[in-house]
Image (spheres, rainbow, N blue to C red):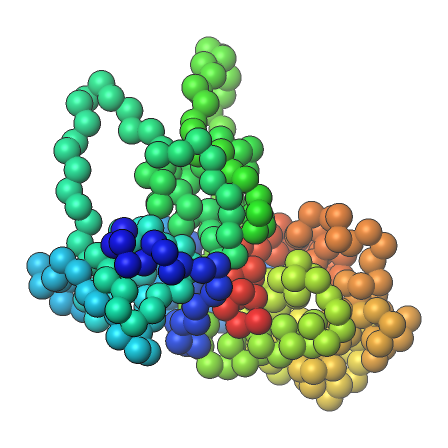
Length: 340
């Protein structure tokens, strides 16, 4: 990392352009949980404009590529890491990693950023690359993918060292182990583990203007009601699964709106459910629930804060595919950090 950055970095988030929030790291062609239960076959790929693959952090760079990239760049007023990465054909994760930065770092005019990685000699065939530190303390804006990339290990290695998985949540201040334990020999007769269904892997999407507006409304109302960050993330993930964060005027049977609530089961009239502000308040529930005791919102669930992420969402929605809420958990926390 350039010396001019090291003394000035702070743990404050930097904002990205609103329409470029994150990446898609899994196939998005499968419809959301409630939609699949309802038998719809509507193609949602035009609705979620992203690409799949673990290397596509945020959006793909539009620059000329590494062959035209200078060795360094001096930051000027108005620059963001995203702008600089796009200008020189880099991924934002790569730019941050080359300069020892994280998603919460701040850059200033006059800082010098490295744009090309310093080549390192390849290890001997018998050598195993090791992390530069034994542990890492999570800061605001970190993701498991970004931490693994910055420390030269794979996501699977980071998962194994900490007993985590694709649905795990990390929090600022949490300490993660970076060293890898020696793998235990598998029993000779043990069958091969079943593959994780693609629809249950971690999901990522780039939101458009309509989805961003609905996500911001969910966050704003959650803040107004005093809902914790985890509760707001549950609401964001639920709306993504149920409606792709769109106020749909169709659904299975009489299901409607952001959360696919049904008039026939007491969630309100069709007009009330199509009011996104009201439907969000009904999902949260609690003392100010517009439906009163007619329906059960998130805040009405005793002990919901200690429930698994997907279980809390399922307790409100009662979906035929409850596991899918958890696949958006990491993305929902990132949306909250960027939009909240």
